[in-house]
Image (cartoon, rainbow, N blue to C red; front, side):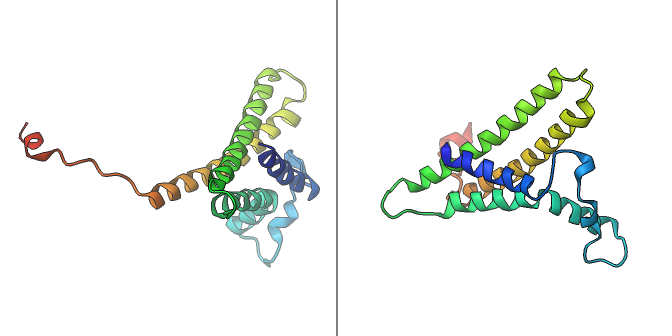
Length: 161
């Protein structure tokens, strides 16, 4: 749990260290116009998204790759230890989203709900969506890597009934 908390805090620290905040007026809109002479809506949106959430994507992907493909030759159950880091990381992300949802629900009549609580909830939802996307990809890869068991043949007497 400590390693997952350190990854979670490191990724969040990088988000804030790059002068990002969980508010819409602090988005780096100039990132939408990098490397283009003319405005193209989809490229500008992708550039802004990657500027805002790129470190989250990169950090989560690095943690997933580290937790799945790192092996320690001294212990036999190191893959289990590393997969638990990923599980705890996902738990922390879901906990962050849940507490953000609770705070938005509790503070729905607060004066600063649209300035503070709602944007924080939106950013937490996007962070969780990206984490769940990686979790789904991981589950799909583990499913295909381990294979799936086909139903056993019921035999001749099972088909007659």
